[in-house]
Length: 271
Image (cartoon, one colour):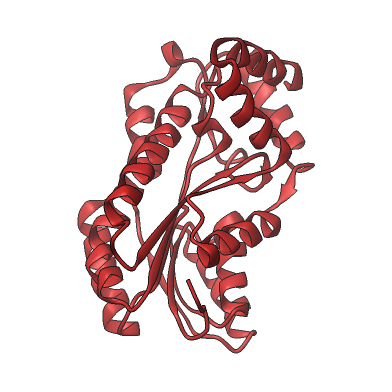
């Protein structure tokens, strides 16, 4: 996008983490924000930080997995802001555990948020993005959208799906004024691991507690947000964030089978 000043941006999962950090950075760059999350308290905190910057922000308590709610949300944004230029589909959840231990309900819940939330966002906001003089979508996948990791079958499925969907959509949008970026963050200090559903025995719960402590040492959400905004500004097809993400991307292309074995060994060593 050529400019961000006075543009209207929608960010899902804006109540904390990468969503909040991206919202704040877009506000600093002059955007008006429409903030979505299920966490009303977190939304209010993000809104307060944005208004303190002298920028406008509306809040919308929305379950991105709810098709009707997302359709209403799109109407609310247009009613309140009159236009739309940027959509950041960021909302995400996690389920930790072997596939055989996960319930179908947990798998469906995760896919509803991580994948269908992205699809609904793109579908219901697309007419308004197409009507703008220029617009951009950023869909947040993950490093787990590049490699299959044991204990993360549902999360990997959702993030691979986001990646494939975004790549196909970019090909369809090439002749339009709407750009699209697939974002692949590596380890980031957010609440997604803290709030993950855990399916398994006591050993797995202990590993999850260790992962919660470990993630606090990873990249701050503000660093991820900076690269997301850069991707929006420069219409990058994808944004690979963190050294491990770039390493995995190269390794998977050079030696896919061997790389996946080594990647899983590395993740097991970290737990």
